[in-house]
Image (cartoon, rainbow, N blue to C red; front, side):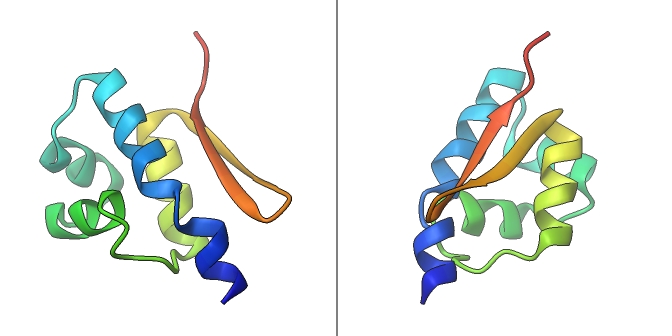
Length: 80
């Protein structure tokens, strides 16, 4: 259950990074090596338990960093 608490807010953070990049879900999916459906589920909060591999793929594609902050995960686009 702790994992669900930590990732339940990650979807909106990923959506915010994707929109800041000006990408569609399909474009992010292609760049991250995921399906568009998977990205959609993540952004909608339908994937409460994300693997480290998926998090790394998304972070690399979005040029973002993620870290644990107490009981949650913070996902932010890198400043340029």
